Length: 357
Image 1: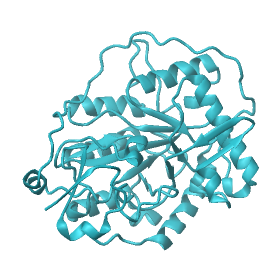
Image 2 (image 1 turned 60 degrees about the vertical axis):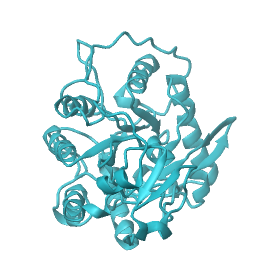
Image 3 (image 1 turned 90 degrees about the vertical axis):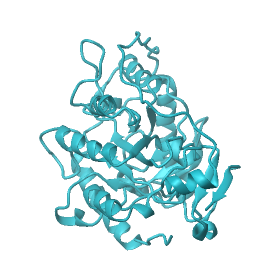
Image 4 (image 1 turned 180 degrees about the horizontal axis):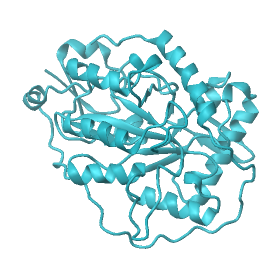
C-alpha cells in the first residue's frame, strides 16, 4: 500500500479551518473558576450498549477471510457545532450528522476514541473498520441531558446513542476536546457532572487548550500555560489525564514539542497523540508513517467549494471505491494482520503478534 502524500492540500485545508474556526468560536470568560466540588452523578436511565462479538485469536486463515489490513487508513472525523442554523461553514445540522453516522454504520465502521486509536487499542470485530468521531470546543450542541436524564435528542451524544440503538454494532463512543467552559456550562459543579457522565459512559473528554488561542502566535511558555491550565481544570472535573490533544485551529506552535509534553506552574502534561484539523485520513498507528505529533483529521462537510476533495463526503465516497485502502480489523486486539506485500510498511508493533497472509 502506498500512503498518499497530500501535504500541500493539508496545509491549505488547515488555513481554511483556522479561518472558519475564528468565525465559529464563541467568546469565553477569563476566570479559572477554582474551588467547586465534584458533582455526584445519579444513576442514568438505560441506554443502548453495543453488541460486539468477543475477540477471537486471529490466524492466517481468519485474517485472509476478513481481508484484514491493519496498516490501512483510518478516518478521524472532525465536528464542531451541531445545529440547524449554520453560523459557519464547519457547522453541521443534526440531520447531516445522522446521515453521516448512518452511512458509517451501514458500511461497517465502528467508532473508537482518539485515545484508543493512538494507543493501538482497536478492539473491533473482524472485517470492521475503525472510525474516530471527534468534537471540538465542548459546544452545548454536543451534550446536554433532558428532564429524564437522557442525552437530548439532537445533541451529538443523543444522535450517537440513537445510531447505536439502530445499529447494535455501532459503539456509542466519541472524543470531546473541550476548552474552559465544557458544553457551555459555567459552574464547575455542572461541568463536573457533565464530564463525569460522559466518562462513565465510555466517552473521552480531553484537552483542547484553556482559551482556544492560535498556539503558533504564542511563546512556548504561553502554550504550556494554555494546555496545563486546561489539564488542571479537567482534573478538577473528574476527567482522567488527557492522552490526546487537538490543536486549536489545527495550528501547531513554533516549538512543536510543547504541544506533546510540558509543564507550567507545577502542572505537567504528556500526550500520546496530537491532532490537526487537516484534510485527509490518518494512517494506522502501526504504520511506519504514523506521526503522533501531527495526526490528520477530516472535516465533516459536503463537497461544495474547498471541500470538494478533502472533507468527509469526498473521503467516504473515496473509501467506498477503494476499500482495500481502509484499516480492516482482524478481530483480535492482540495481533496485527496485513497482506504480505505490506510487511515493509509496518512501524510500531506494540508487542503484538504480526500475522501476514
